[in-house]
Image (cartoon, rainbow, N blue to C red; front, side):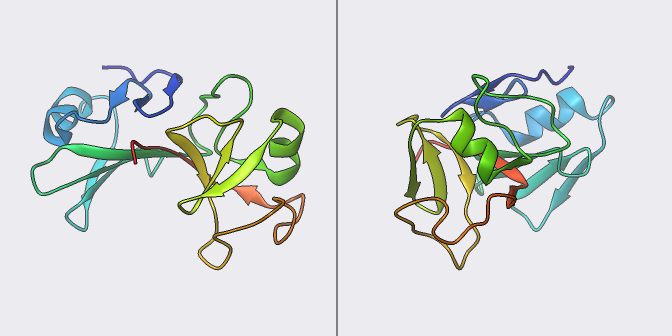
Length: 140
C-alpha cells in the first residue's frame, strides 16, 4: 500500500481511515514504510510522518500527521503551517477541544500548545511565525 497525500476531515489521512484496525494497517504497509508501535496506543509511520491512535481493541480513533507528510487539505490546512498561513488561508479560526478549527470544518484541526487551549483571536497568544507541527483528523 502506498500512502497518498489525501486528507479527509473526520475520516482519513494518507488513505488510512479512522475505524480501521491498526494491525491490519500495519500488515498492509510494513514492507513499504518504517512502522513502530509505541506506548500501547499509537503507531508511528516513517518517524511520525503519520501517527495512528487506537484503543485496546486496535480500532483507530484519531490520526495525526507531521510536516514530513506532504498532504494539504483544500489548499488551506497542512502540518507545518504557521499562524500567518492559517490567517491567510482561512476566513475563521476558533479554539475547539484543544485544536484550532477553521472555517467551520469539523473533524480536522491544528493542535494548540497545552498552555493555550483557548483564544478569541488566534494571535492572542501565538506569534505569526508559530508553527503548527501537526495536523489531526478526528471524530469527536
